[in-house]
Length: 105
Image (cartoon, rainbow, N blue to C red):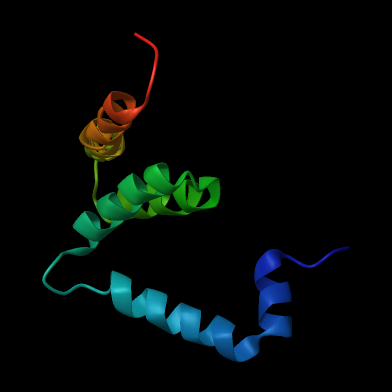
């Protein structure tokens, strides 16, 4: 039977794996933002980065932290708008390049 990715990472680079886990715990600890808000942010970012493993981990974590399914979906919509917004915001680059290119219409 093969090892899980986490076990393999720990076996190959135990110090880095432990540092990652410590960092993750610190990031998701309650602070200025509560656990639910942090998990909703994580769900949104996971959709922007298109990480299925992150989605599968943080959607249930958001539920455990008290987020409703509607809140999770709203976070995903915010992520979608922000991702699309990047394309719109950079459209001037394409229009400027088009205008400066020779020939055509």
